[in-house]
Length: 346
Image (cartoon, rainbow, N blue to C red; front, side):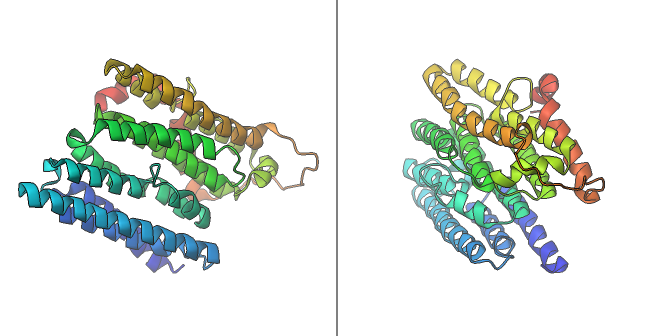
């Protein structure tokens, strides 16, 4: 793609995200969401492969439907209360429609079907944008409207997302699809706590974005898309593969690593809110996603295929991303000891 065009699309993405995050009026928030959608479409379909075009079409249709529902819910609320302010969403029907719209934007169950397909049809760098920055505006809207949302509905959506995200990722061989189901599972953890402690949702999102960015950039560096190619990739940059193992375990939420922090805090908060059964259930369901993270980690470093291909060791990697990967990997693995400081910041 032309670098100038690429720059315009990336700038538009940042602009759309900023507009939605900083707006008070529903129409401005909707405008930001639309700019975002239109800016990411060329980045999804830039390879001109039929699957990429299909992914862009699916993405456009679902996001257009979700944006229409956002407008519909805000208009219903304005009709009943005379308020266009985002934080004044008080009408129950509007809250219900908005929850459905945001669930569709994010890819929460039962509106999750588009996300794995779109991620599978996109390049890894676009997949990174779809999994991280494109989730920020809808989560911001949920954050701003969290006092008036329905707790039962969100808890149900969250538990279903964690269950299906773990269950459907089990027998996938395409890494982008596995990461899509991982994203759905993490969104479940964010959705269950948004009403009780919205700041924890944001913390969970930031750490999830950090770890996912590390995984996507690492996979982009070693040029891996399938589990079968991941098995032979250890010969390219062995040190990077070893760190990918730790990042995947962190994404799974294992204790000494960064990914354990949001899960720990969310379980603690749910227990305080007398939701111990929900906390137990969501913790057990996260074991499903732990299984496919372990599968990925096993393929990354622990397998030694019978016919190893003779690769030249890559002593010179892409300089532009290697520093970013080094910083992100360190943060993805080692932030747990400074969790008191993180908690004072949020």
